[in-house]
Length: 229
Ligand SMILES: *Cc1c(COP(=O)(O)O)cnc(C)c1O
Image 1 (cartoon, helix red, strand yellow):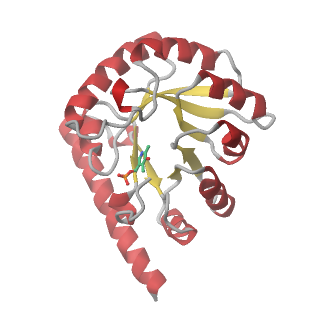
Image 2 (cartoon, helix red, strand yellow):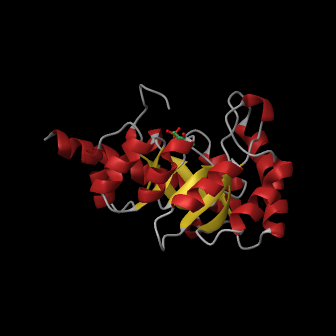
C-alpha cells in the first residue's frame, strides 16, 4: 500500500520536473534531449531508487561512498558520484560509479587512475569554484586547463566537462552567468569536453538557461531531506 502511494508521489514529481525541464529548454531555445536528468537519491531508500528505475530513470546521483555503493549494487543504472571526495574512498567509488562530477584535486585524479578496475573508463567532470572564499570545493577557473590536461593524460578517464554548485546566498542567475563565461572559454580549449553539470532543485531552470547539460535534482523528485547533505 505505502509502496503504491510512494510510486504515485515519485511519478508525479518526476513528471513535473520533466515538464519544468521542457519549459526551461523551450524558453532557452534548447533541445530537451541535450539535458540529462540525474535523480539525486541520497538519504532516500533503495526502494525509491527501484521505483524511479521502473519509471524510466537511468541516472542516479549520490554524495556518499557507502550509501551509493549499496544502492548501485541493487539497482543497475548510471551511478553518478557528486559528493566531496575523500582519498581513502576513491577505490570504492571507482568500483561502482560510472560518472564522477566532483573532481577538484590533482591528487585524486592520480589516485583514481591508479585504482580504476581494469578496462573501466570513468566519465568525469571538473568541479569549478564559483566563489573561492566559500570553501565548498572546486578548482579555481585559472587552474581548470591544467586540471583538464592532467585528466587527459590518463586513458582511464573521459573528461565530459565542468560541474558547479551555485554558492549559498548568491542569486543563482549571477553565479551561472559567471559559470557560462568560464564554460565558454573551457569548451573552446577542450572541445571534446563540452558538458556542463549545473542546477539543483531550486535553480535548475536558471542553469538550463546558462547552458547546463546535466541537472542534478533531488528534493523536487524525492521530497525535502531532513538531513541536509
Ligand atoms: C544534494 C545535491 C544535489 C541535489 O540537490 P537538491 O536540492 O535536492 O535537488 C545536487 N548536487 C549536489 C552536488 C548535491 O550535493
